[in-house]
Image (cartoon, rainbow, N blue to C red):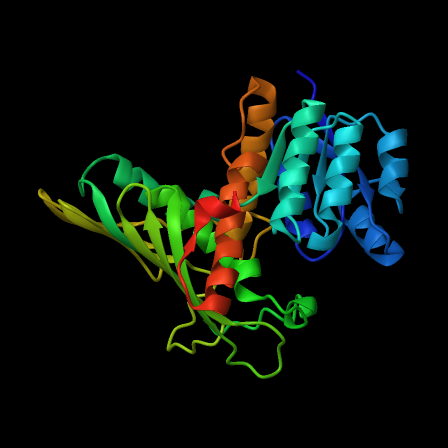
Length: 343
């Protein structure tokens, strides 16, 4: 079966990882790229040998015979580009955050549904191999029924050097990073009924919050704490590792720094190294995230070929996006927020 042909819209910081991953994906390749910045278009086109280059997304979709579109632009442009792809009856992957507002995100889901095309959000953190290992350990039943979780991402890594725009937005850590960690909480413990949040800005040079602590009540009856910080200086910098604690009625799971997974159950305790592979084009410390980019993009292609919905479909990601909105509402009001009221 011939490879599916993809068009990439957006040639910025993170899109380079997506382009590397597309070269390794089985069953698809990028044949055209688009960016309004001619220099970024030139750099990515030259680096990956893409000859068909466009400054206008509408022109690219009208001119190329594509099987799907990968939208890797910043959040403000997502709705227009997803709706454009839907108008061309093209399946579309959209980078996170899904949209500027939950209403925009709902409209994008509806546009793709009406067009009869799949929509997947590039929510890659749950696809990191250490997180997949945690889920697999839960699914074995070794710790019984989970009743508590803590999903933690605490760091002092300078994310602003590579993505300076992050320092300018009034929303920062929940929208950019917390959305990933909240999605991991959903992935591991199920959907959420109520969320309580507290936020803080420690770094005076940025506009948004750089610390967030969130308490989640899950439909399963479990409770979890999701905590994120870019103001935490540790003896050993853990970036970009997500640390996980899961307590069950028969044991515990701990994903500790250095990708060490310890499962303690009735039969005893065992520790496994679940370090992600270092792909040929990846670099430390980003290799954990870079591997998950390849995994989620391969999942997308496999889903397109088999006709099944991707795990991080637009409809699924609305539930994660609602947690982001609930967190900001809860932080502003100081009160718990019922997630169902937002969906």
